[in-house]
Length: 193
Image (cartoon, rainbow, N blue to C red):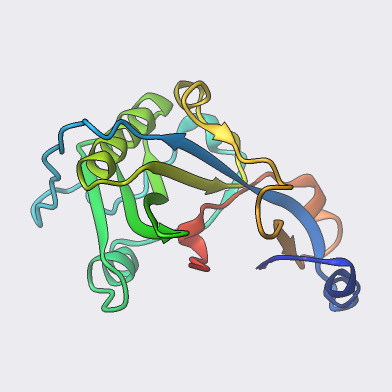
């Protein structure tokens, strides 16, 4: 797997190494309410759903990264380089990172894992309240999969011409598997920030 910013020169080399284009990684943004109240963020060690990656029934035919609890705790809670906010419920989790974009504080959803689309929306709304409560002006999502239905009206796709670079996923697999699969990646899978 290769997540990169391809251009006319690099695509030739990427393809010569056996990688094939799988999907674009799209960026979505939602402006936040600067007057929103901060939610209570639950990070209990006893919460059994924290860092358990549920698989939604409607996503069973997709390819995604598999994570275990140890990896996710190392990746987000014990990471000395970045501070992450972990928002959990009894049905999933969502990870938010603060980021400065041209001097403006924004939130970036690193990943969300939920048992249903509705739970994913609830967790995302909590990240929005948390981000706004911390003075962030917008929430960003970077993903290869379509947004769940409840988020489509609040998040707008950022046009590619506005982004500094186009992000794409290239994969190297046996045969024609790559072109027939639907890849589900989020920025937490590679964190180029």
